[in-house]
Image (cartoon, rainbow, N blue to C red; front, side, top):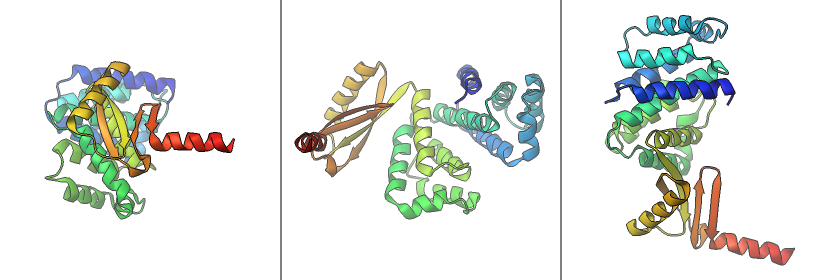
Length: 262
């Protein structure tokens, strides 16, 4: 990520924090705008003319998306006025705003947990992953498939995020899209996501203790995504950000094997 994009993301995220988002309307409009910019060579060309004044780019999106609500227009104008490292970064930045807006408009829904479960389902079903990730698949059909699978089983915010992302993968794998979205939602809610691998399921008390310990270590609320993986044999492996805490029996056995072999 270039320095220009880093600054642009910080500015647009601050705009979102100052905005009032009480439902999913803003998220829907931002997702649609990102898709339309990506699909229109003329619009994307105009918005990536970094030599043009930012105010002119902001006015362009206000004109093109004049039918949108005031909050969506404000956020789009703020994004367009910034100088991004690339057009792809601009589109991804608007998409990130949409995901954050969905997190804000989701109420108390466990969007992080639902996104994690969707990701696990996709990982366990190669045919589903192919259907959602195929470059040749019709975008609308992918969105319809997501809605068929998730409506009634996940919150409206989660259905919206997954449906929109699979329709505009832009050379990204489905699981990567879902993982990025999960981290953005958690960040918007002031949380850190930890993936925990164990040989057998943790009960509520064990999860609570582990989350508290990790929260104290990292200085933030921690959301646990627990993966039951018999290959770890025992113990626990925690992946949080770039850190890995591996206290599994399988890891100790591998260490012993290496020492014996060396």
